[in-house]
Length: 285
Ligand SMILES: [Zn+2]
Image (cartoon, rainbow, N blue to C red; front, side, top):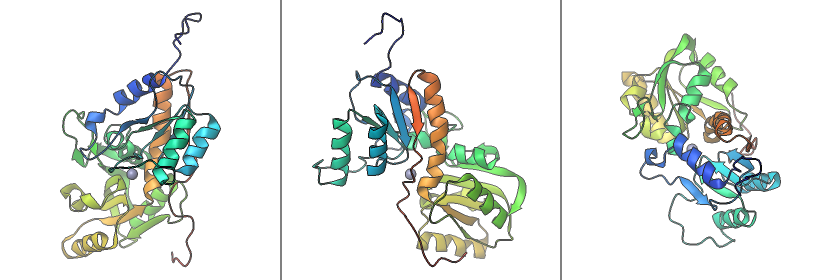
C-alpha cells in the first residue's frame, strides 16, 4: 500500500532489507557466512521488528507474541547445509512458525561484526577504550576501520581483577559470568577483544601483544596453550564471557539506528537470555 491519502509511504519488508543491507552489506560478511533474508516477502507491511542474538523457540515465541513482522537475529538460523525443514527438526519447527505468523527472519552476522558500531566496536566503546582499531582490517568493500575484533587502550591501567569487574559491569547476567586466566594483580592497559567465539585469533600478533584478550568460547586446549605461551614468552591474560552476552550489547544501538531510518516502525530488543546455560553448581570464585 502506498498510503497516498497521507502522502506517507507505509514501510514494507523491502525497506528493512534495504536499510539492513546499507548498514551491514552482505558482501562484507566472511565467505563462509550466510546472512540476509532467511524467510519473508518484500511486499509485506512492516510495523514491528524484534532484534535478538539467536533465533530459538523463546525468541520466535517473543516475536509472534509481539506481533512482529520481522525478527532480526545476529546468528544465522541456516548456516550449514539443510536437507529438511520438517517440523520435527529444530530449525524446521522455527521456520514453520515464523512463516505461519507472517514474521520474516533476517540475519546480520559477520557483516554486523565488522563495521563501526558493530559487535566488537560496541564492546570497545562500552569499555571506554581509546584508539580502537580492528584486530583484522576487513578486505574491500569493508570501510577503513572496519574489520574483525578491536584493539584499544584503557583510559587508565587496571589490575586484571578490576578489568574483569569492568567487563562484568557492561555484560548482562549469565550463569558463567566472567572467567579469567591470569594473575589478578597483573596490570593491564592494552586490550584486544572479539565478540563471539575468539579461539581463532589467539595467535594473532595484535592479540599476542595485548595485555588482555576478551572473547568467548575459549576451549581448554587453545586457552591452556595461550597461557603457557604467555608464561614462557609473554602474552595476554584471557577473559572469557558468555558468547550471547558479548553479542547482545550490539542489539540496542542497531535498533536505534534502524528506527532512525524507518520512522513509524517499532523496534524492540529482546531481553531474553539465549545463552544455552541455565544454571551452574559447584563453581569457585
Ligand atoms: Zn556469535
